[in-house]
Every structure is written in C-alpha cells, then in structure tokens.
Length: 101
Picture (cartoon, rainbow, N blue to C red):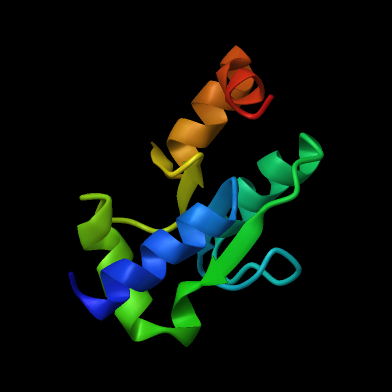
C-alpha cells in the first residue's frame, strides 16, 4: 500500500467526518470549499479539515483514493459522500443531516 494511501486511511480512521479541501475551515481558499465548510458549520458538525494545498501528495492521492476528480471531498465514517454540489443537494433534502447523526 502506498504511503499516501496509508496516510489518508489513518485520517479517515481517526475522524468520523473529514473534509479534504482547499484551505482550512477558518480560511477556505475556494468557493466550493467555502460552501462545503458552511454547510457543515451550519449543521454544527465538528469535522477534520485537510488542506490539500499544503500537501501535494494528499491532493493527488485523495482524487485517486476516492476515484473522485475534484476537491473538496467529504468523508463520513470512511465513506466518500462527494463534493460541495452533492453536499448541497443532500443538505437541502435532509439526507446529510441523517448521515451525520
């Protein structure tokens, strides 16, 4: 198993909710990451933010790991939920709230 894959799996094992994003939850560095962060904060969910801009290995590795081409990526209980568009749809439908219970 590659080092980056191990790194990602450790992050997912250690945290129930992980958002791989550009920037941090305090300072999102793109609109999509800002929207994803805002949704989680609105739900009052504590989550681990991983700034992919600080780690090129993780930035590329997470795209491969989840077979998902874009950032941000939300993982809940080690499962890929999706990016900010999917998060918004699920949030509006009440599905994200259910997943996070």
